[in-house]
Image 1 (cartoon, helix red, strand yellow):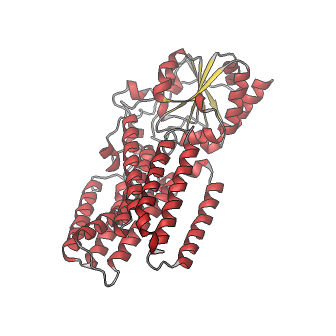
Image 2: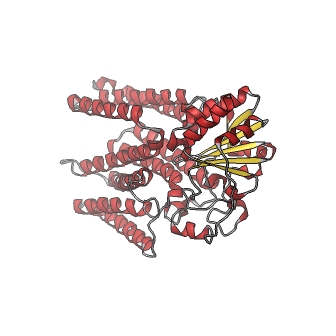
Image 3: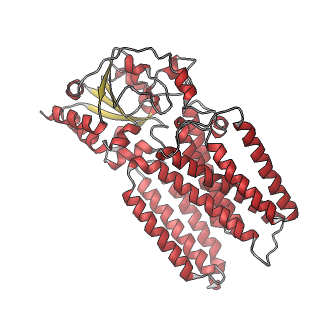
Length: 460
C-alpha cells in the first residue's frame, strides 16, 4: 500500500484541479451539473489515495462511517424540500466544524506525539474556527427552520460579551501554544463554542443569506485547519478554495445589500424590532387588490412580463405551476423573463435552484444587473413571494434600514402585480411602499393556488 505514497502528491494535484473546475462549473446553472461531477471525482480520488497511503487504516470502521454518511446524505438529498434547503446547508456546515474540533482534540490527546510550534498553532486555529462554525451553524439552522426566533439578540451587553469571549479564547489558545497545557486547549474549545452562538444570535433574519455564505467560508477554513492537523495537502487546498470562495461570495452579497461585511458578522443587521419601528408610524395605507383572473387578464394582454420570485414561492412550492403559467403566456406571444436578486430567498442561489428544479430555461433567468435597466420598458411585473428585494425605500427613504441597498426596480414597470398571503412585512420587518402605488395590484392567497388560478384563467 505504501508503494503508492510517491504518487499521492500527483493524485492530490489532480484532485485540486478537479475542485477548481468544480467551482468554475458552479458559477453558472448551465455548467453546474458538470461542476458537481468534477467535485465528486476530485473527492473520490482524494479519499481513495488517502486510504491507500494511510498507515494501518481501520477499513471496517471507515467503510461503516462512509456507508452511514452516504445513506443519510442520499436520504436527505432526495427528501429535503426546497424550503428546507437553507437550514440543511447550515447543518452540513456545522458537521464540518464539529469534525475540525473532534480531530483537533484527538490530535492533542494523541499519546506519544509531540507537536512542534507550527502544529500547535495549526491545532489552535483549526479548533477554534471549527468550534465557532459548529455552534454558529446550529444557531443559523434554528433561525432558518423557525425553531429559534429570527429576530436578533439585542442589548448593549452583547458586543462586550463578544469581545470578552474572543479575548479569553485567544488567551487560552496562546497559553496552550506556549505551554502545551491540555486544560487550556479544552477551555479555548469551550469558549469558541459559546462565541459561535454570540456571533450569530445578534444577526437578524434579513441577513441570513449572508450568514449562510459566511458559514460556508468558515467551514472551508475549518477543513483547511483539519488538513494541517492531518498533514493532508488536498484537504488544505480544498478547504482554502471553499473558504476563499465563500468569503468572496459573502462580500458580493453584502455589496448587493449595501452592507459592511464586518457589520453583518458582528451583528447590527437587519430584521427585528428596530427595523419595524423604523418602517412607519402604523398609519393605515390604501392599496388596490384584485383577483387571480384580473392578474391573468393583465398579463395575457401584455407584450412583456418579468417575474420576481421570492421565498414565498418556495414555501408554497409554486415553481412548477409558475413555469406552466409562464409557458401559457409565451404561447400567447408574451415575452416572459425572471429577475433574481443576489439575496433573494434564504441562501445564495436559492431562487436559481428553485427555478432550475422547475426546468425554467436558463436564458430566461436574469440577474439584477442584467434586468434592472429593462423594468421601465416592461408592461407587467409579477412579484410572487418577494418583498424586501423590491422595496423602493432602499432608493428613496434615507431613514430606512435598507437605504442604499440595490433592489430590483420593479416599481418602474407600467403595472405591478404582487402575490402575497397578507399585507404583513417582509423578512427584514419593513413595510413596502411598492404595495401602495397606484400601478400596483395586490392578489392575496397562497402562491401556488393563485398561480394555478391564473393558469386556468389564461387557458380559458
